[in-house]
Length: 287
Image (cartoon, rainbow, N blue to C red):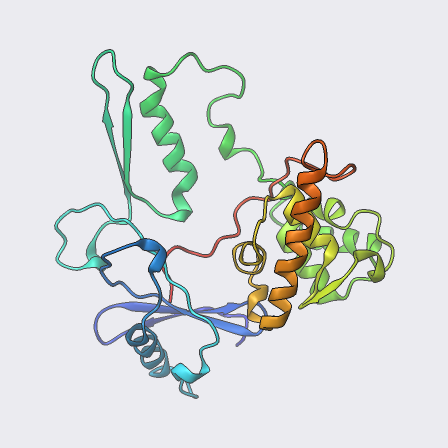
């Protein structure tokens, strides 16, 4: 079924995942390969793509081939060296090491960790640093565990209600576009679309449901600076856009950034500032 995720056991003892992705794609991963060099150059190799296709095909009625792959990505995950015999056996937990000689600034080193534990890692780091820092006042301890990320200030079962409210306010939006925007911005959606009452009010269409209003918001309120920031790091619209469309987005963003630089405050009048909807990054090690 298209809405189900699967875990496949490989004959080499590893597991891989097949996950519904971006309404029409399947995300297959991951691999564990040691990496040497600049992390910025990391990419899914032909051998890794072949391995994932072959492993998934063992369970699927229709085989997956490398020719069917429309996009791949990879990341480098630092793991704490516990002298494990293989990468998949190394702990994904984080390790904190505090170096705090008397009368010197403390140095906290963070080894390992993963995206899904970033908040608890930050709490553990501050707990070690707190005795070395000036008195902290203001927000109560543990507030990050009780505070919603921007745009997420509604109950876990409240997405349907948000959809109903957004449909009433922006009835001109097609359902797939409304769903994507709500999942990306939540209760911040009115700030993204402003007072729009018709699709034409959203400005220039760039393709795949990306309009000028959203692009301008990302530039001015979420600090997007390149097309890749928008179509890969804050969404996955790059799966649906042509090279010409991406070039048009890049050019439009350059013009918007010039407008921002020319404004006295760096942001044109009437634009919401200081708003970030939080990370929408992909996991750190997939292929």
